[in-house]
Length: 275
Ligand SMILES: Nc1ncnc2c1ncn2[C@@H]1O[C@H](COP(=O)(O)OP(=O)(O)OP(=O)(O)O)[C@@H](O)[C@H]1O
Image (tube, rainbow, N blue to C red):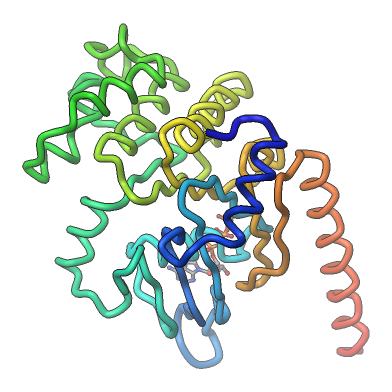
């Protein structure tokens, strides 16, 4: 499995020539509008995107650019106004709510900024909860590997309140990985963590991709977090306006600054037009 940036570059190049089954999720013409008439907000404007399997994709962009909406539409958490979304070969646009619920439960893992653990359950119970609800037996060998990769072996009997923020997010990460989902969506997973715990969680997500072959899509505001990914997608006003392979924090920050300058010029031009 690739771990150095050179190896990652090779796997990135390979992904560009990958067959269609190397795509974990796909959207075409994905459009999402909230409200109607004059007050309508176009949160996503005809987005085409391919999420490569076994890779770590970060989604960045200014506040309100559509990052969460994109994630929610790709994960079947929100309906679309137009366009199509697939998870693997399954077109999810048009599925009924009950089918979507099952698809999310069986094929997608989620991580949130606020961990979303059940306070009365211990770490082990939290990790297997989605599978218990689904009436599925975990693959013990896989679960052991996940628990060891995340360094949670000696914390399994602890309840969330007895764990640090970083440990709680590691439990949430293990929960997302437990069923070996086709895709993990992480919405600002380091947003509530100090930088050391944040780095640890990002390292585990990276390992989940490199060593366990998982696919991760992470929404983040933090260039340092995005630098752990293989590919950054930049959103602006509901469109994918740019992308960056093998990002570094500095390069991502520079790119974001450039968008701000372009936006500033655009806004200034619009103001001049109005005068
Ligand atoms: N339920 C909703 N009703 C109306 N408008 C919404 C709703 N959800 C999102 N929007 C609007 O859609 C646009 C995109 O929102 P979204 O939350 O996807 O952006 P974001 O990039 O994730 O922002 P942030 O970084 O602040 O979380 C914004 O203009 C937002 O105000």
